[in-house]
Structures are given as structure tokens and as C-alpha cells.
Image: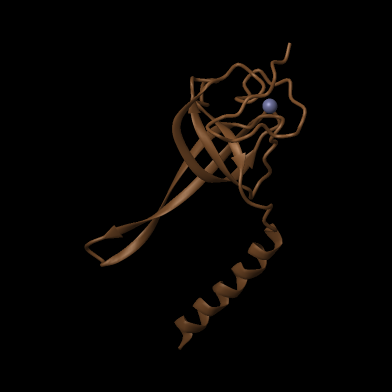
Length: 134
Ligand SMILES: [Zn+2]
């Protein structure tokens, strides 16, 4: 059933075993040359994931930047199996489901520890309250 794994946009096929028909390396899905980098923020059991990236948007009235973010529902092939916190690269494909039109083709980062993020959050909060008192 499986074809020989192929390279996608110069990226070699991952080592993991795969019977995923929607996998760009082992399945029958072809990718387009429209790429988005992002971070996995949600991972579903049905080979789906949500990625997110942010950018600074200038607000002229306040002469400051605000952070704007974009989210995208993507397919997570079994051979890549991206985890929450990993930086990934996704490519556009044909529609894979009602909400998915993109597929992960590369994992670029390591898994971040959610504990470190949680530990730094209350610190920032206490700083803010101190400043408000003074
Ligand atoms: Zn695969």
C-alpha cells in the first residue's frame, strides 16, 4: 500500500513508520509552496493539531506595539507526531477535512517545558501589583 517515502520541498522523510494517507511523505497528499512557521498549541488524538504564531502590530494612536496572533488547524502526520510546544513548519495542501488545509512537514524545535512558563507568570504579576502600590 505504501509508496516509497519521498522528499517534500527538499525535506527528507522522517524515520517513523506511517500508514497515513494524508501524510505528504508516505501518503497521497501533495503540498503547495505556501509555508507557515508556527508553534503547536493544541494536539488532538485524530492526527490534528493547532499551530499559532504572533507578530507585533504598530498602533499609531498609542505609538506602541500590540501583539496579534494567528492560528491554523493543521494535519499532524503519524510519522512526525508533533508535540505541544514544538516549533513546526506547515505547508498548504488540498482540503484535508472541513477545517484543515495544511500539513506539518518539519519539526524544528524541542519540546518546551510548560513548568517554566507557569513559574514565570506569577512573578510578573507580583511586579505589576508592587508598581501599582508605589
Ligand atoms: Zn508519513
